[in-house]
Image (tube, rainbow, N blue to C red; front, side, top):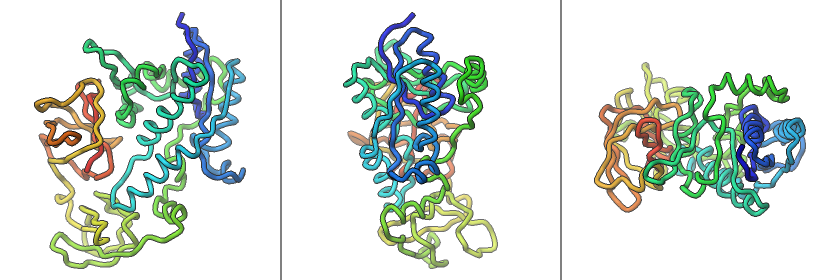
Length: 358
């Protein structure tokens, strides 16, 4: 049996609920915490916005905690979420980039802020329901290892965790298939055993990012020109926040054949349109690096890199070209290399590190 006090971040979903159950069974003193991050105070707005933010999440998590017989609290992280997630999300889109708010939330809110507050109340560590595993390697460093459930693996969105954070984190469901997690929840009578998984970005449940940014900033995005790679004007667009690299649908251009967004130029508010082959690239640069299984990419390394959450990953060479910048050259061209997204490097099942595509 294990011992120690662990705070489990409980979203009201089946994964974090089973994580709390598993840790209690292992002998830990488990404390459940739901992070209140939704910005609206109005009850009807909180109820409409589910996922890991709304009142329904709080009530589901509280029911699970009662069932497990563990202490449970709601902690207010609105200020941290506004600064590190929403403001970042809005700012990146206005710069013509495509951010990943879940990565920012994981690093700055779910770990940096929750871990600090958990230590302040006497906990030794935190835990989540993420599908990933944490191992200490022969070189002494902590690293993420891919989940047993390949289809649910979440290591991509967790590459930014530091050595200190990994050393104080548990991810117990990473050792299980998703079906087994639901089976465990049903067998022990957890009230969320059949609750569906949340899919969308929690603070934009309708998926209309541009409308959210307009509401958040209080001003509509400025229109600009669609241009081809030679600078010829093809039409007028609604504003750069409506577009991302590789986008084909929703352009409103009658070109007679499918065309794609190949570049966004915030300084001129131009959205560059090209053919399918123009969306492919073999090289990218990334900064804002975090190293995990290795302390650095000294002298260049071979890796498998993922450039978005649902990317299968592909072989590449990685070399440092600055103190905080790497150049990545893929063996094969990759579709829609997108500034603002993360590139994460793997050595087999282990995360080597990652950064933000520039």
